[in-house]
Amino acid sequence: MSNRNNSIDGFVSRNRRSSVDGIGAAQNKPPQRRQSQAAPTVGVANTSERPRVGVNRREIDESLKEIDTPELDKKGRVRKNPHQKAKRRKIIKRCLIAILILVVLIGGYIGIKAFIASSKVFEGNLFDFAQKAPLRTDENGRSNILVIGTTEDSEGGMHPGGDLTDSIMVVSVNQKKNDAYMISMPRDMWVKLDQPCDVGYESKINAVFMCNSENGENEAAGIAALQSKVGEVFGLDLQYYVHVNSTVVKDAVDAVGGIELTIESDDPRGIYDPNFDWQCGHQCRMVDYANGETAQMDGAHALAFARARNAQGGYGLPNGNFDREKNQQKVIRALQEKAISAGTLTNIRKITELIDAFGNNLRTNFEVKEMRTLADLGQNIRGDKMQSISLTEEGNMVVTTGNYGGQSIVQPVDGLYSYSGIHSHINKQINSDAVTREGAEVAVLNGSGIIGAAQVEADKLESRGMTIGMIDNAPDGEYGSATVYQIGEGNPATKARLEKLYKVRVTPGDPPLLVSATTDFVVVVGTIANDTAAR
Image (tube, rainbow, N blue to C red):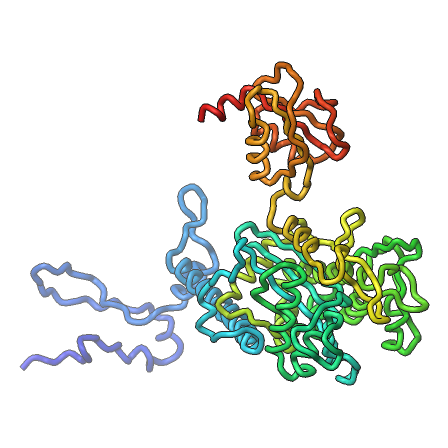
């Protein structure tokens, strides 16, 4: 019976004699190579050495050296190790995942904050936010928003008359044209009440909300009554409202890190109103700015500035509430610009504080599904795309001050309760183009010899938004297809429209016929009338 190899699972164990040999000469004795017996095997090459098991020190050093020293190719460039590339990709992937999780957590936090705030403010539910519903509009495609401010939250809720709407404004936006107009309603505008109140059958318009809301207890009724009355005065259909208190202005300005305003006053000293000095213990002035100064305002100072008017002992606001309304619009503009600036949108703390400010102190009938449309409008309507319409512009004043029943009031220039002039003024601004807003007067003269040609052309121009003055016959002469004269300067939009319409250059100077002193352009109809008659 042959001897069995001392092996386990096909591996031959080491000869243990080398581990127990004596120390000394035997240690220096060179190891003898064990010869394998001749055993021819088909298909397998013979080997003169027995397979070695384990790793020696030299091999470990060489492996470490390969790790520390990059492998070079024939041109001396570092050869890319596929194992190292895979390891780097894995590390980068893990880092990106970590960053993504952080962003999602932050975004989720802001989203949750926004939803909690929106649930207090907007009508609808969370799933509506996925929509982007257009805003409701009037027949002219505009969305008109009533914005009112009350002070029931000031002075610890003990402010007398806190439910009077001392700030009333309409913001009219066109979501297709991306434009907006702000119109401030004078709080002292005298109106008839639709139902009697403690103040009687007539009052200043700032009492309408208080009377109909039962001193703030019935918000919906108060808002509906005020929307109706403001719409009556301005000639607008109001689809939305936003109701804020004094806290939202202060907190919102603080949330964005303050605002910057340029002080503009007819008084060379600037603006000073002592009414709010009590807020700092009469040791400072809350509203005290030099004319032309670029003022940095925190929330408290911005609120005081927006409420300042011609107080006793102050200066710089000679027009009282009219000046205050202009300054309120300035604060809104500055807050909007700061809120959508890059510095605010990338600052998580500012965003959450702004959300809290609006969520806690603002009421509206906007719906959640309209929020994305509102956000887009806020981004797109900036700078000269948001304009102010003044009711007291010099030379174009449609309201004035007066006295009624011993009270100082504001009333239309056309007379008490006569709002048609206000309607026309506002409509001309928000529902027209630049030509209509210029209101240049155009005289049309018939130089064609065709009866009625001037009237036909005048009707065509009026349909394009132009204001027609006199219509008459021109002296005999050659006028080509048409000749256009401009008297004086200005009115660039009307000039460009006439040149494009008649394909001629406007001729400066006197026309061939004496016209009224208010005429800006004269159109003399020539052979163009023949073309019109032929059609």
